[in-house]
Structures are given as C-alpha cells and as structure tokens.
Image (cartoon, rainbow over all chains, first blue to last red; front, side, top):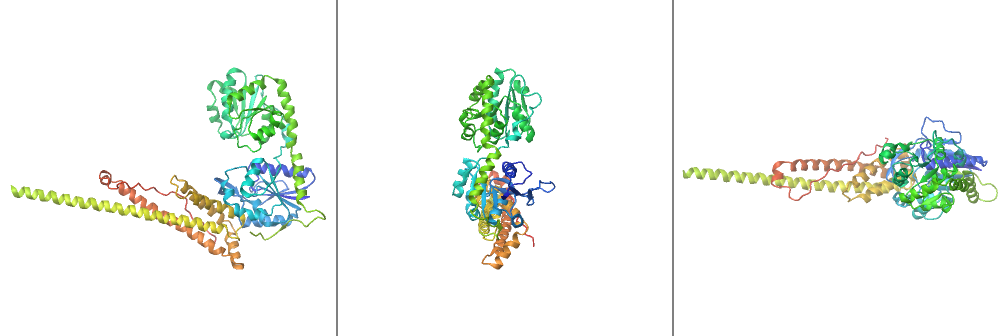
Length: 381
Length: 188
C-alpha cells in the first residue's frame, strides 16, 4: 500500500506528534508499505528520503501560546503538489484539528483519508470556537483514530462523531537493552524519575517529599532525576543533608534516556493527572524497570491494574515512600514486576500498533479493484 | 486708617475671587480631560470590536484555506470574549489578534488568492481584506489618541493644586491601554 503521512509540526523540534509519525512511518515500512511523510522542516538539515519538506513553519499565537504552524496558500500549494506527485492509495493525517498542514491536506485531498487525533484537553477553547471552520474540512476524513481515551473524549466533545482507540506505540527495541550510567544504580539502590522538572503535573514534588523521608531512613539510597527544566531549582527543594545523593541530569537524549531506565532499581512515575497515555511509563516498561506509579486512570490501565507495576495513591508522598521501601527490600518482587512489564509493553510495541493502523486503512479503502490514487482537488469549504 | 483697611480688604477679596476663578477653571479643564478620555475609550472600544467582527467575517470567507481560518477565528473569538475585563486580559487578547493577523495576512499568496476568488465567484474576498486592514489601522489610531488623552489627564492630575483641593473628585485615574497594534502590511 502506498501511504502519505502528514505531520503538522516542525520535524526537527522534539515533540510527541513528530515522534509518533516518525515511528509509525518506520513501522509501516517494516511491514512492507510504501510511505512518504509531508512535514514542515527547518531548512539546512538533510531529512531521510521518505520525509518531504513543506517549507518552514511560522510562529503564530494559537490556543494560548505561540505555536509554529504551516498555513497559508503557499503551504496549501505544496500539499497539493505532494499529493499529485505521490499517487497515494490513502492519506493519513495527524492532528488535523490544528491549523497546520494536516488540515490543509484534508482541504485539498479527494480520496480516502484517515486521521489520528493526539490532543487531550478538555478545556481546549480553540477547538470549540473554530469547530465550524474545521467541520467542512474534517468531514472528508473516513476513519478517525484517537491515541487515548482522553483524546477521544476531546474529539467527541468538540467535533462530534466517534473514533477508534489505538494508543501510541513504543519503540520497545530502542529501550530493551542499554548500559546503565556510570556508577549507577550502586550498592545503596537508586530511584529514578524522568519528565519535565518545572511542570507540577509530572509530580516531581511528591517524589522529592517522599525522598526526604526515605533518604533519612536509608543512608545509601540515591535519586536520579532527568528531564528538561531548571536543575538548580530542583536541588534547592532537596533538604541540604540529602543533596549529595540526588543527581539531576537535566535534558537527556534518546540514548541516555534508555540508559536512565536501566540505571535505577525502582522507576517512579508520580504524575498528578492530565496524562493521556504515559509514554515515559511505557518506555520504562520496555526497559524492564520495576515501576512505582501513581494510580491515575491512564497509568492503572497501562500497568494492568498493578500487575505490571506497583501503584500508589496519587499525590501522597507517604504512600509513595511506603511503596518504594517495600520494592527496594524485595528483589524477588522487583524481578517479577520487571518481567511483567516487559510482557505487558508488547501490546504497545510499534509493530503491534502499526498492524492495528493498517487494519483501519483496509477498512477505509473501498473493496474490489484498486481505485485511483488520492487526488488533489481545488479545495472547497 | 479707615481707607487702609478698606483697601486691604478690597485686595484680599479680589485675590480670593481671582483664586477661585482660577481653581474653577482648573477643575473645568480637568473635567474636560476626563470627558476626552471617556470619548477616546469609547472610540477605541468601538474600533476593537469592529476589528474582531471584520476578522470573524474574513475567517468565514469560503475562499480562505481552513488553517488560516481557524487561526483567525480563534484569535478574534478570544479578543471578543476578553472585552470588558479590566485585568489586562483584553490587552493581551487584542495583541494576540494583531500578531495573528500579521502572521496570516502577510503569508505570500494570501491577498492574491482572496482577490481571485472575488473575481470569479460571488465572493468579495478583496473587500473583506481591505476592511480588516482598515479596521486594524483604525485600532492603531484610536489607541494612540486614547493614550494621548490618558497621558494629559494623568499629568494634570499629578499637580499639587489638583491633589490638595481634590479637584479630580472621585473620578478614577485612567490607565494606558498597552497593546501590540501594528496593522498587517499587505504586499502590493
């Protein structure tokens, strides 16, 4: 099958949607499909051959912050040319409700279109306001996918209709094996955290509070923290006596991320909510890390109700400390959880997810002899 | 002796009369300034409302591609909802609308595409574009005049005489309207 994927955000900027499109493209190619990705690119970089640049994205205020988006008639012209030259059996656009390339592709294309919705934001006013402007372009989509229950709910509330749920994939292979960081986890055991340091919803504060208690009881226990944000601010929140046992790495690249998961005895995900899927959790599971996570619905689901990782009451440092202590003292339980996590994460492997996506493609494509490729119409509203 | 007293009294009375005339003239001037601020604010308010209405109409023009339409509708909607709030959120929302307008309308091909549509079909894209640009320019002017009136009023109210005699009464001290009001520049 020849598939055209459209990504609305700049390819080189790290982000969930870009990562999703990139991994999906690779998984589809592994399954033997022919894939081309259209995306805004910064000039100056040489993208892989299956990535087609739609020019630069322009910074513009949208939905309460400044986003870099590709819009306008010139961008629409590029989409049209890509569709004409591509001869795709089917288009798969991502985040088509964002005013960028994906929406333009819906506007321009004539033929089978599948769309994946990523955003989960119950208070997304922008989507509600512009629903009328969106509706006509989005009516052309014949199969809708949501990456999480929350994303599905957002979509249903603002645009109506329904979508099938296919969660994000995890590149299990990328995380399965990695060297632990130098000197970790060490004799005295270590707890790990990965996520934005300055985003309260990631729950780092809960973990720091718990560590203040745990660290006093266990003289050798260490804490490994990685993620973008102000590292000095985190250090300031640790009691002075424990500071030399807390390591804050700041932003890490993909390779080091994998090493972080392999460097700790217990990986902690203390998120307070708002998480639609928990990609970090799934990566830690792929690495086989014993997991201790807050019992928010998304995590409860991914961790199979506690079978693939311990759960503690969300936002409760004492509960976190109790759970961590129990895990640290029981090597057998940790080994069990590690095996269970590696097993459970297979359901989220990109190979599995891409197969589900292909099933959606097959459902949307008309039966019988192959129809003509997707055409570029004039675009009408 | 008697005539001295009379002349002193006459001088004092004259002075008091002159002073009261002066004070009342100052009070009248201040009152005029306050009225000017109010009028200027009404004009600015009208210009802003008119701009967001024009932008909303442009956003629903059938010729416009949907990404730009969504951006415009979103920004104009936010600006309209922020109207009447005094905590600076209106200034923020209107600035955002100015930035969105520039980003969308200065994209290459914007004007040409709307003008073409106007020529072939029933659309009036080019008129709409003109209207939005004109409304944005009016916002720019109205804000200039309003801030000018505010500056004069604040200066007049800062004088010692006005403060000691409470000439401003209970009228609130007017605030500047701070926003990004740079209108979009269309390629000719």
